[in-house]
Length: 276
Ligand SMILES: Cc1ncc(C[n+]2csc(CCOP(=O)(O)OP(=O)(O)O)c2C)c(N)n1
Ligand code: SF4
Ligand SMILES: [Mg+2]
Image (tube, rainbow, N blue to C red; front, side, top):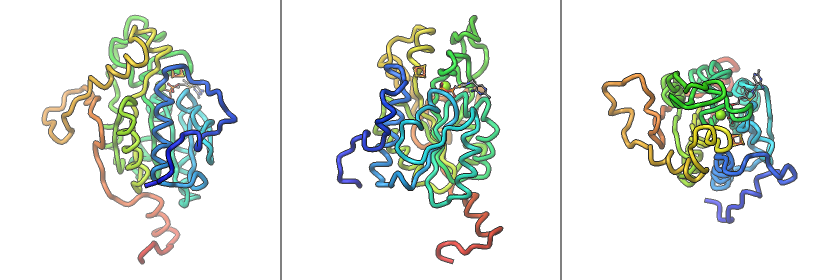
């Protein structure tokens, strides 16, 4: 454990401040939890790389003082795949949004899970396309109002964690921003895991989505997210209705199969692995 007191500013590009997030946006709390986890693990920022797509969530890489790549919308996992394969010495982290990761980038997500690519993917789920004005996303709750669902959303919500688990992700977990220490611990586990780790952060877009749906201030939004948590577990669900088991938090699944890059280096490049 790092004995030095945690100060997020040690990990951020202060030259880029003031940041562009709205007051009360949950994405800032997620960023704090991420650099807190890195601090505790004492990983050098020189040994890390952060890749993000487009969105308010995607913008976060601009503020991280490390190797950062702000790439095209929906494609951070594809870029990160190339990076992880060519630089296995780096710890690769993807920061993405619900639109970036599940709508335009959904195909990349399922194949990275299937291949068990060695990276941590942190999806900030605020239920909306925040950056572009609050349009409906694959995680917008039913009946919620957005500029593209003026009569209320009629689509069921994607359960991203269940999708990632079913597609083969090595570690899957979810946390709300209010539980920042638990979120930090979850990110720590994800960073330590060899293979594809998928973390869904229940974030909030207070300014657009919250305002449009009368969800109150940011503290009110994140408190109501926390109070809708359910302690039930996937393992105990027998009759699975078509609705997401959306509010279970913590580590939801874990498997220890080989990550893709290791298999590739051993089988295709015929490189001996540690201990061989
Ligand atoms: C190819 C392409 N299509 C659409 C866009 C417009 N666009 C930018 S960000 C975004 C959605 C972002 O939503 P999300 O990933 O949930 O991030 P948030 O802003 O909510 O954090 C869209 C549709 C784009 N930049 N490029
Ligand atoms: S528009 Fe929404 S998601 Fe984007 S910074 Fe503002 S509160 Fe956050
Ligand atoms: Mg979003």
